[in-house]
Length: 161
Image (tube, rainbow, N blue to C red):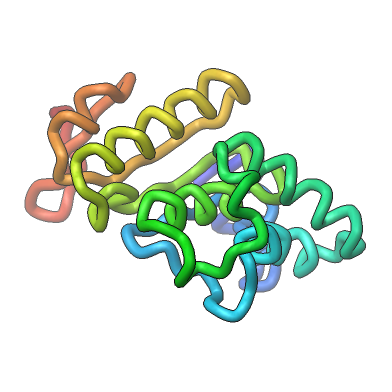
């Protein structure tokens, strides 16, 4: 597989981990936020792991929380956030290090229809505004129908839907 012109099959495990950390953002069905940290700190962690200074990481995390409309809740821990807010914090974290692609696995799976729609609207807005490419795995046909291209997994293979 080529990613950014780089043949990933030629990379070591360490190089692959670095590539994932810098070029790919991940959003899962469950937010996987660290419970002892605030939304701001959770969004800053990937940047700190990548070696950015704390002050720079927190400043960028604040900008990302603004993008996902979560700034007023930046100082709150995950248990103090609603499901939709937790997922938006997870999206902000996924956007840390400015990835070129976002992989989202059932990003609305744990949300009610209204919150799920808000999260999908947010993802599409971010894609339009930033040029971010997205791969979204979903069982929700309404979510899938909004994509520019839809594939279906059948018998272990991807097929045009």
